[in-house]
Image 1: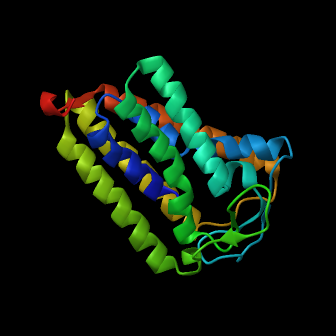
Image 2: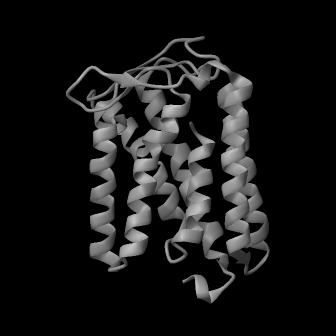
Length: 223
């Protein structure tokens, strides 16, 4: 799953209005931000196999430290603890921890049977929605636009940057999703994957932070 994770980030703003959108984006995508670094240091492994699924060509050979359920729980608890230490806001900290953990459950819907439960066993899960393009896009876009609508109902633009920047960010995420689905498979190169993932995620996070700075919570009672 790609764009669906960001849908949850948008929706989470209602539950944690004090948390910046860039932080919520980073939380739901934390393990995917960590993943390319695991690849470049040869800790986890992936292969690009054209046609592996209908939606993308990634054969996730080994990624238990970023994408196992147990490690999702560990990363979520760690994120909660660190945020609470810094901000002393237990509600926001819990929301961030749940966003980190949510990644595994959202991925469970689309992945083939490759998501580990723990880093130590061989049991894996996945409902395999990536083998059905239409169903994948419908589910992802429903989650994304549902979350975006929650964010829009929770915040208001301070200026034109906050209004048009938000739609620019949404359009970018839609284009990336469609490109990943219908475009050619990426090169089977860890270095290329690392560079492309890091640049793309840095751009998305930058835009999320920029957009959120130009918007504000509609009702002070939500804070």
